[in-house]
Length: 283
Image (cartoon, rainbow, N blue to C red; front, side, top):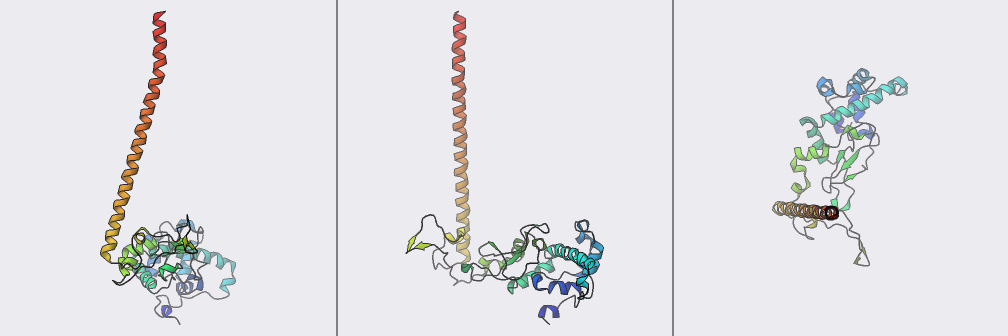
């Protein structure tokens, strides 16, 4: 028996059986009280044909038997039960209890690690690229490089809607200590990003790794501290504001130039008209 099953709130039930499936290891167990609360079911009930049967299946205290999995009717209800549980799961992980469970699993590396070499196997967070069912499968988000990857673990049967697009950002905002920049020790040194070269020479047009703006301003083997990170962030904001002002000024100059050209064009059109009027008066 695994450690998670020992502390399960649904020993031997459908929820524990469902979450213990090899493809469902990213999912946590949603409380029965949360599932039974009508408020949490708003917007879900109307999407399914066997909603009541599916809810009863989810709340069953026993797991399905092998013969049940051969019944076509059971499989239809099971498919809807899986999606209903997934949508409830996407809401449950935004609660205080749900986010606390996911925080512990994230710290334990249950969701895997970033495949990027320079992230040094940083833990990743599940993310869905769409809120709608049957649109995209689950992906993982790395807080360090802020990129999305295919999970290495077997999660082929998890729909991205079971987590949603906002969960990684919500988790990092709820628990700021999880953010990579707060986890760096005073003597931590940043890794340089990969830069492609040919016989020691840089290749024109090849930038290599996608470097974050903060990393671009940190020199090789430069010690990261909270103070210089904040200073760099402020410099980046100032640079962006300066660029915005320059762009705005350029746009204004272009508009003024276009307006001036339009006025000149209108004046040129009026001159021949005035000459014609003068000729008519002379005649």
